[in-house]
Amino acid sequence: MSVGELAGLLVAVFWAVLVTLLAVVLVRLSRVLKEATVLVSAVTEQAVPLLTDAGAAVRSANEQLERVDEITANVQDAAANAQALSSTVAATLGGPLVKVAAFSYGVRKAVAKQNGTLPLPTQPGEREELARLIRAEVRAATAPKGGLLARVRRAVRG
Image 1: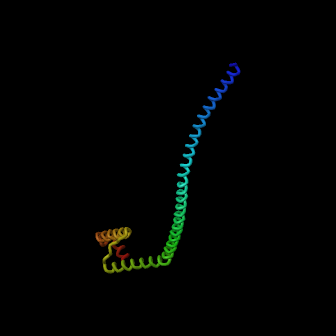
Image 2 (image 1 turned 90 degrees about the vertical axis):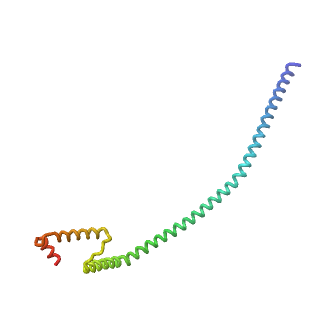
Image 3 (image 1 turned 45 degrees about the vertical axis):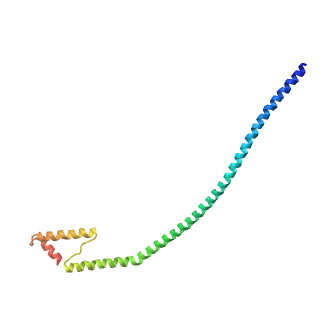
């Protein structure tokens, strides 16, 4: 064999080894691509129903929000109507009712004063007024009869 033939043989062996290694790499790459294809198809099969469910959930949430908006608008209208009714009742009946209550209170006090008995007060201001009147009566009863204060009291009472 000549040197040229030996060099040709070495190049042929080198190319055979290189082609074998490339064939092994291509076989492994094809296996990886097949597994990737299976994985992508599985993800696609699972993702499509998930996206469909998510779309349905969003539509349902939108419907519920529309209902809540309607309810909120109705409640707002009802509150405005109640406020208008309240202010109308207060304007129409409030003044006369206060006058009737004040008149009935005055009549009760006058009748109780005429009978000599005072009803027990229910309001804190009325209780303080009653306590002040009782203290004044006690002072008047225990004060000397001929003093200046007694004469002033008799003059005020009439």
